[in-house]
Length: 228
Image (cartoon, rainbow, N blue to C red; front, side, top):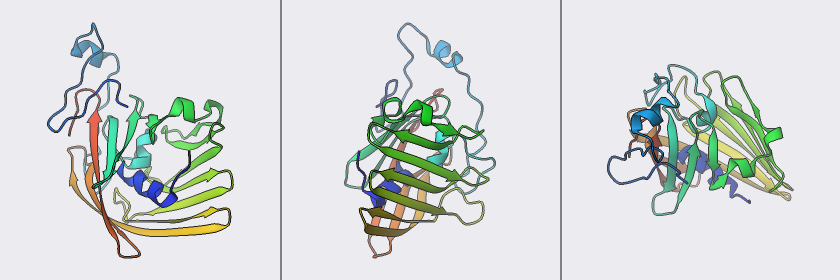
């Protein structure tokens, strides 16, 4: 599973659905066959979220949602560059990824290699199937500040910079080395159009070469917290 490293870093900031369907209007959660919606919700009660501001965090980010700066009980995320195809993620009720870049994590990660911190944030994972490693570093607010990816003779490191206690990174830069060939990137981000959980739905990315791109996200949430 080879990656374009610059695009991989961009995808992380953007953004497979077993129980949900996305639509252009309000979406509705469907209960498992034979269950009422009330019964389905009672199976996994979810705590109320306090991180609803799109600009600051009231408590540290948790679980794998921290990698993408997400709050609320996100079940599904679609992200894409305007005019291009989508990338899809899925998360379980414990805020752990079950689908990543179109790959089921149960098949992608070697379970014995997975390491998490006390807040459930993913720190490290290996994939013997693809000869890859993934490593993540977070700050005191649970924000991603560095990720490292390796594949055979390839390695990339990406750094995420924030202003104060801002929820989202304003600058993402890094470099990759593929068999001795080095690539670098240095991008700045401006966010707009947030949902009720403060998760952004539009980001403008300006690259060092002057190129501008627009990324968009869509989300679905557990416990009937479904937005478009």
